[in-house]
Image (cartoon, rainbow over all chains, first blue to last red):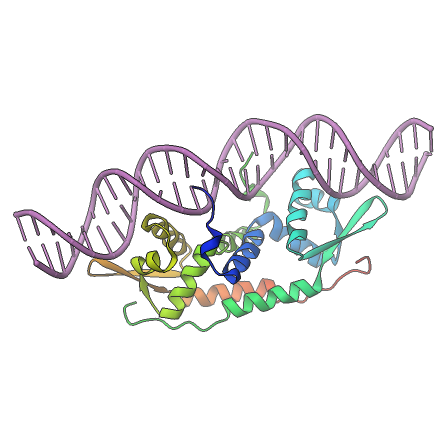
Length: 109
Length: 109
DNA sequence: TTTTAATATCGTAATATTGCGATATTAAAA
DNA sequence: TTTTAATATCGCAATATTACGATATTAAAA
């Protein structure tokens, strides 16, 4: 027990859920907002901005990189992170497809 | 350690993240989709549809109820679940506000 | 009234996540 | 070449989540 049974769901459901799961942490929301506002930033900026340990920020950045929503490019001894526009737009579409559907309700409610 | 430091984030960030966290599980995505397609359903329908134990489905339904996105009304010995339209629309707005923002990228990327 | 059916809740085992100190890696600066 | 700065990774402790059997609760059916 304790393991999500991914086999029983459709690929689409697993994919959407795993994206939402990554975004479902306030640090990662804060990181995305900061990157969006500043256009780009380095890891240390986020350490100062958020007050989490460097190891923790680095870990959150890794998870965001894993889903492709941000990208890091080496810039001397630091790494410049920014939004990966193509992926951001893909996600917009997927989320809109799910959330912006029209919902009808039965008479029992 | 192991505890998310909610104090250091803005209320909005905590709120958005906690909604996304609830939606970030394939069972809960599947439940929402089933309810949307069928207009309404009872817990047992979902047990048969998804193949998870009744206790597990009940727990997921509880989490969806907690954020207000679904509603259950007693119907004899069963409970009829459906989407809470008002809340669904509120969430649409919040998600659109975040995800549908335009993103500019710095020259470093 | 007894039985049955549908759901909720409790307790628990397995696993996942979060956060951080310590350490490794890498590239610029001195 | 040595030092310094920025980041990544490892290992671990604390906590959270997931799933489920067992049991309680409630209302219809027999």
